[in-house]
Image (cartoon, helix red, strand yellow):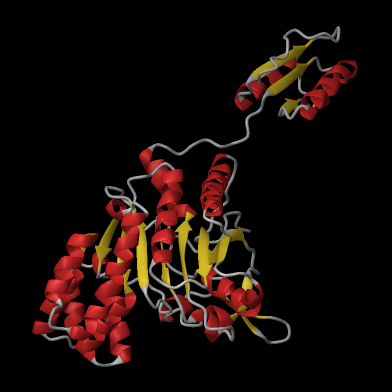
Length: 412
């Protein structure tokens, strides 16, 4: 019998558990400042819900099972579809915009790597019923404030525009399936060398002229206004792409109003994995960190309607707790949020000595103090060893005359 957890999962104990809890609560507190309300959805969903426009890569990662009635389900692999399903059913009666916060675990069958396991802990913010471009500015401000709250204000937000990328790619390959194939290749470009990227482009029959065009396009990355100006110049002759740049220009004005322009970069080569995105897409990363994306999101206006609800504009983001934990650890700023033991009561190992210790422990607990005392019948020296390992704020020694050797500090 193996006593290790399943591959790609881990046990969270004490310091790590409370660190995860603190990260999650810090993000949720920030979301509540922006009006988000928490929702919990089931841990599994109909496969029709989970696989809707997720993309083949995500669909292949879903843990599938059949219930006893032969119905097909999947363990939740993404939070957004479940929330969209909830809005499709209940959204008509909820005042708009609807702001939903979800802290949950999801599961994907993929190769485990640093900061990315098969069990993923994350917090999502999903907003329904608001169109561009002001809400993009507000949501990105909220997104940034989450990282600021966590103590990593140097976080940069990479902003792309999925329809612009799709149209650009479609103009090259003229086929939806090939367009998606090209986008998936662009999405993994940072994991490939230049030679590997060129080779894979040639493998999907992209000629040399278009390879150069693709490379110029995906290199459009940098400060928002400066990169927009470069994009307008580069794409000036492609009139069907200019409306998308106009949308990005509108969003950029709200980035200025929310005072986060310098926290963002325009990155037109940004793709992201989900195929349900219909507008702006974005990711957060920390310059100089050894880890990649620590969160991301985008606009997905069609998803609610695909589940049978009213046509509802939507946008949202998710922040991965696993990777944020590692980033905070890498920076040396991971706080220790484990509960502190205020007092450890040490007694003589005699039954008559337990009465004052128990009475004092219960009195202190009514005052919201964390108290430990021996319940295993350890002798005095063993109790002292245990107390020192637990590192309480104060050790109280109770002698056999039922009096205190040390007073109780009321400030602990």
